[in-house]
Amino acid sequence: MRKGESQMRKIIFLVLLACCLPLANCAQPVEQQPDTAQSITQLIEEAKCKVYPCLVRIDARKYVYSRGKKSRSGGTGSGTVIDDQGHVLTNYHVAGGATEIKCTLYNQEMVSAKLVGEDPWTDLALIKLDMEELEKKNIKLYVAELGDSQDIKVGDFVMAMGTPFGLSRSVSLGIIGNDERFLGDSMRLPDGKATGVFNNWIQTDASINPGNSGGPLVSLGGKVIGVNARAIPGASTGFAIPIDIAKEMIRKALAHPEGKVVRSWLGLQFQKTQDLERYLETGKNEGVIIKQVEKGSPASKAGVRNLDILIEINGEKVSTRFDEQLPKVRKTIADMPVGTDVKLVVLRNGRRKEFAMKTAELGASVGEDEEIKEWGITIRAITKLMAQERKLPDTHGVYVTGVKPYEKAAKAKLQGGDIITHIDKKLVEDFEAFKTMVKECIDSGKKDVVLKVRRDKAVNFILIKND
Image (cartoon, rainbow, N blue to C red; front, side):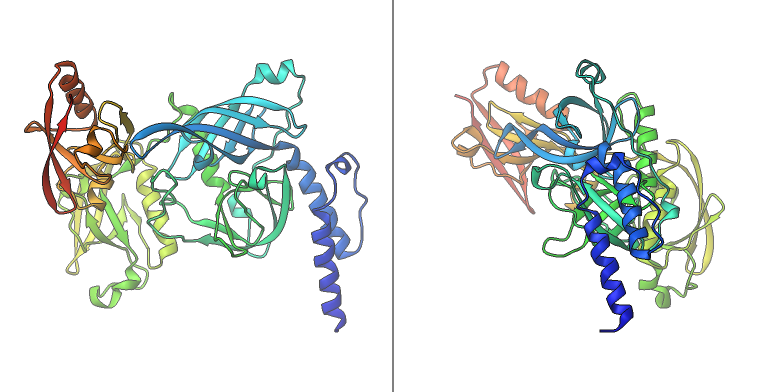
């Protein structure tokens, strides 16, 4: 074995060994070591000591809608204390929509928390520890320092911290394999909501197991540089949300009275120019393809068309030749305040055209859920994105997410995936209208109700018997 290889293996061994150092050692300063491996070991130990006490396990309970009924479901994840007010940063898929939250701290004490901010588009959520409970239990709060995304680089050592599989805290070590990983446009959270549209991801081989979600990805400087979010099953590859995306979400959610992140929307879907640059005769670094203009959107009303090449947004050049550049152009529009005047410059058949419009508010990707106990179904509001994905003509009606066995809807052969568009020949305008119409049918004692249902491309009429 060559001397260089032997030294490298020694460094790797010591680096891995550092992750096993007990938290009790955090109180003791580590002496400076001249050896490279020992220096890395020291950095890991110091970084761990800065963030490890800020790591919490999260047990969250929320309502889920499936098989025609509403029920409570629980899950575990991780989070990081980010300020002295008790705010904890985690994933939306860990705490989003939670009605009951308990956090286990560094000293094994359990403290109540509540949801104060959520953003499924970035898979981030913000919860707040019960500060009165902390004070009563005389628990000291440790706060993690948030880093900056521009300071990280491929090859940097990082630590993924969390509570894997619902166990106690742990640390895994790895490197950053890619700091701008594009994971596609069709990612979905467990509740069906779209995510990852406005950001790329940090890729790492530090283990991110179930339960690590929401925990911090930590640099050797002891700063949180990402939020652990997902992994490829069976592979040593995980992904974290960049901390700059998280910091933006925190700021906006805390400023909003309902803890939301409000974004702008023009109704445009984009595609990288590399796919069609020869056909469209565009420059290699010029613009982005508009692959779809949504019906009724600000862009559609202004006259923008499919296959236009967007080259400027309010005077700023647009260059999206590769997939990794797509989130940036989407975020440029989304970050504008709702109602902002926007001027788009496009190329159409080689000629420049300008369009003026105002941004509208970006709606949810997935609508609200509700249980209709009287019929034994669960329903979901139809959003613009859902209508577009399912090729529906509009957002009228409601989507049936589940049917409870042996109840009225099941006996009438209503199915999950059906779209109810009419009740007794009356159009169901939206989610709220449907609930009102059902209540009126029940309160009036009406025995038979006819539903007009869209199932795939077919239309069916279904009789619900209320007796």
